[in-house]
Image (cartoon, rainbow, N blue to C red; front, side, top):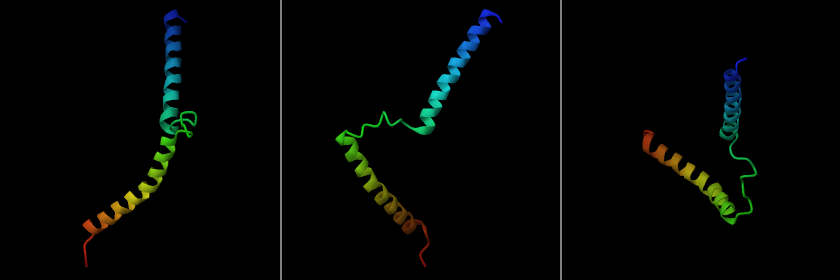
Length: 72
C-alpha cells in the first residue's frame, strides 16, 4: 500500500466516524448530559409547553374544521 493510500484510508475512517457521531445526534436528539433539569427556566418552559401544546393543537383543529368543512 502506498503512503498516500494509507493516509486517504485514515482520512476516510475519520470522516466515517464523524458522520456516525452526527447521525447519532440527528436521530437520537441531545443526550441526557445536555439536558439541565435543575435549571428553573427549563422546568418552567417544559411545563408551559406541555400545557400550551395540546391547547394550541385543539384550537387549530377546531378552527380548521369550522373553516373548511361544509356546513349542512
